[in-house]
Image 1 (cartoon, rainbow, N blue to C red):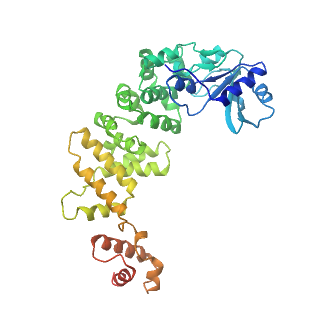
Image 2 (tube, rainbow, N blue to C red):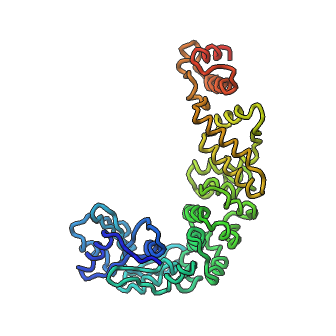
Length: 404
């Protein structure tokens, strides 16, 4: 297992704290990732310095009091924002999500003891080495997600940890340790106390993991707690889907139908584009697609592209192909659909009103009244161009528009 070589800026911040008589450590996910030979997304530092003492340790640096009540101070060190958080213990978790209070402490043992999983409860600094009180390094080697201390206690403190356990196992390719797994299922109803935004964030990462299928099967009771009964085929389909969240949500919700799938994803308070795409993707499974080899194949693909962007169309095809591959059905037609769509786009075929060689203003100048009919006329001109009944040339389009 790889050793830890912290970036020089992180080491410099830890040294600055040491110069003032405090202990500083890189902590949590960055330590886990470096032990696994991965590049961390960011580095968190924990310290026995209280927030005011942390600020005083960096008199020459801008200070951002981002999370002062939780002990977090952001130091802008040589242009980089570095979060430094005081060791702490948590008060009661009355809402299964947030502690009622936090208490700053000087002992790293107390701080690490409150964390969620052993693989996230390690700290490191260059002078002292690895602080691993709960055998997190061993669990990484064993590929195990295990709660720190009693699993029921950890999940009752924060119900989101149920999904976090599943997410880490999915993304890292680990298994959930037996007692932790039992507690995940036992406490699944705690998820009702968690905001849908946080559920969406964790679940999206979970279904994008390499190990998503086996984790969702193992914890099917948790999945059904969130979304009701999901057919096994939908879950298995994830292994054939690209790692794109809208396609994967559509695969899971495929049995619901377009409207219910749309309502289900919208209930998670996702952005409008995600809602639109998941709804469209599920609906597209009922579309009758053009058959390769037919005389009108290319024209019918062009009409589909006129109604859907290429990116949307590619996702539609990837979802159909995933179910075809899962069922052992030929995916040749799907491949030809995508291949033809690419050829049309790269060939700059007329696939939108914007690509017509005439605009509404030009039609108006030619004597065609600007009204609600203008949109219909432009759309009909695009259809005629795709069908090859009129050339995509300004004069030809104006002449045809006059008789529409």
